[in-house]
Amino acid sequence: MNDSNPGPGPKAEAAGASDPSWQANQATQLSVNAVLHAQELQRLNEQLREKASLLDKAQDAILLRDMEHRITYWNKSAERLYGWASEEAVGRSAETLLKVDAQAFQRAFEEVSHTGEWVGELKKAAKDGSTLMVEAHWTLVRDGMGHPVSILDINTDITDRKKAEQQLLRAQRMESIGTLAGGVAHDLNNVLAPILMSLELLKMHCQDPGAEDLLQTLRLSAQRGADLVKQLLSFSRGIEGERIVVNVAHILRDLGRVIREIFPKNIEIRLPPGGEAWTVVGDSTQLHQVFLNLFVNARDAMPGGGRLGVKMENVVLDAMYAGSNAEAKPGAYLRVTVTDTGLGMPPGVLDRIFEPFFTTKQLGTGTGLGLSTTSAIVKSHGGFINVYSEVGKGTTFAVHLPASTPSAVRESGKTGRPAPPKGNGELILIVDDEESIRTVAQLTLERFGYRVLLASQGAEALAIYAVHQNQIAVVLTDMSMPVMDGPTMIVALKALDPRIRIIGSSGLTNNDAPGTAGGMVVDHFLPKPYTAETMLVAIAAVLKSS
Image (cartoon, rainbow, N blue to C red; front, side, top):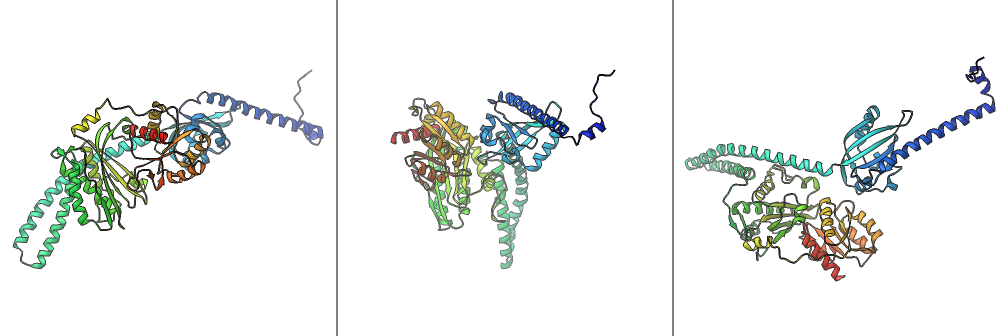
């Protein structure tokens, strides 16, 4: 006798299909299966959360999402990288939240679905609107039955690395173009020299007035070509030239006489008196070209008129300054700032202004070599240039040249100067869209006894201030930021707390009198970029006055 029970056969199932008790048993079995499957998923998710939580302190952002891309886990590093808290991110679509390119996201999803793994680079958006580049590692997670249930997504921030790669490629491209420009200029000189000499001979033997006009036109065109060759040579071989001690104040004074005569009368020109400006070692002709190029650039940026301001400062740059400026080295410099109130430049143009042959001017009105030549000459003198610009508000070029005056050398090497003032645990809110500035400022302030909160733009700063209003002693803010800029943020902060202490900072200083920034009254103003000592002294002064 066979005791096994094979279960109901087809006829029994057909007969039981109309039996209410059989139907109830079947429904119960389905419910049990669904519950078991849900429990299995919950158990799997809990295990994954436990494993992922071990990496909460890692630098990589780790998130877990289901097959519909809804986020089910979001670690602390993801909060730091993207800006959303776990409660804000969980349950939302990763593709939508991080604004990933749809095609790139779909291609990655198809590959991880087929192979179980995908590694690649993706561009994503943070909560503050900034763009991040991440190296993403996706792993397909399956349940006990082998069904795909989740995707483990590990993201490494490579934004700074990609920027560094782009800067390196740009530098290599500039070097290649410089080498090419030098060769082309040499050959062009050989072509233009006999043309110019022949034109002078033809003019001596020509008696026809009409022909003389034609020869004059040819001479001017050939001379323009020769001038272009000179700029090419200056760009490609900026290190050439005799180096002597130069007083830049004398160069600016001589240039001032010229530009006041030839620039439109609707441009107001403000030049520095000279004073006790430090000297530099350089080629006076090349430095003359540097500032003439900047003046002409400012004039062209103000077609409807405006104000051209020049300022000279003796500055000693410290490690903080050098840390936020890749080309700067600590030491004594003469800083010459040239500021206009013209059209300004958007970020895309600002990134390319020193590239040779790049110009925003109309065809025939610019060669695109003025600023590239200026940059090459300044670098060949051991200096560097900072540029700040806002569309509709103007542009500032800050030229830094190593100072050679004995007093500058002594000032740079001083070790006995009073130490910058220290804090007593006061909480400072730093608001700036430049990560390098935030990082260096935080390290400096914490080293000198302050506590620090950071925000990358105005809206984020408002949220932070609303939580820590009773603790924050001073807000140090940039004036030009995405999403919400400094002036707008200051209005909102003063509405929250009329007694708030604010230090404004900007690279555009021409419109800003002491104690103002972007038209807003603040407790102190720091022209960008600033040194650690300048920042510490400003904060101490504001705290003392409160």
